[in-house]
Structures are given as C-alpha cells and as structure tokens.
Length: 62
Image (cartoon, rainbow, N blue to C red; front, side, top):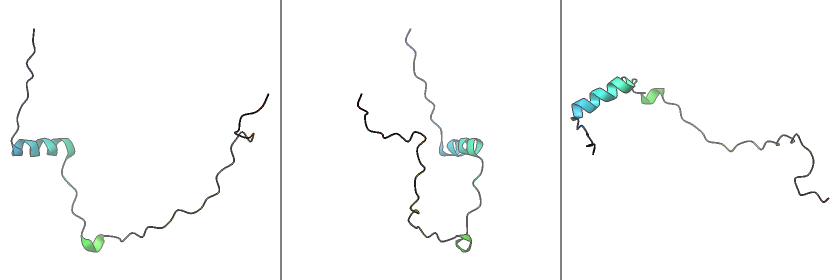
C-alpha cells in the first residue's frame, strides 16, 4: 500500500490568519523617542573561582 503525500496550499490571507491564530497580534511599534541608545563596553576582568579540587590538573605519576 503506497500512501500518497497530501500537501495543502494556502492563500496569503489563510497564512496570515494561521499566523494570527498561532502567535496573536504584534505589539505596538516602538517610537524613536522611546528607544534607548546602547553603549557596548568590554566585560570586566573577573578572577575565576577556585576549583573544588585544588590538585593540579596534570597527570600524576604513580
């Protein structure tokens, strides 16, 4: 028994309705006066935490 693949084709209006049903409406647009300028900076140089096991990570000789 060979199954036929069934694919539907939707119109633009049907796709728009399906997007609305799935995601809802878009939020209001942000006005330029409400936007905030971002200034990127370097991350601070933080000292890493000490490991719980303070033995050296190199292979130990037996």
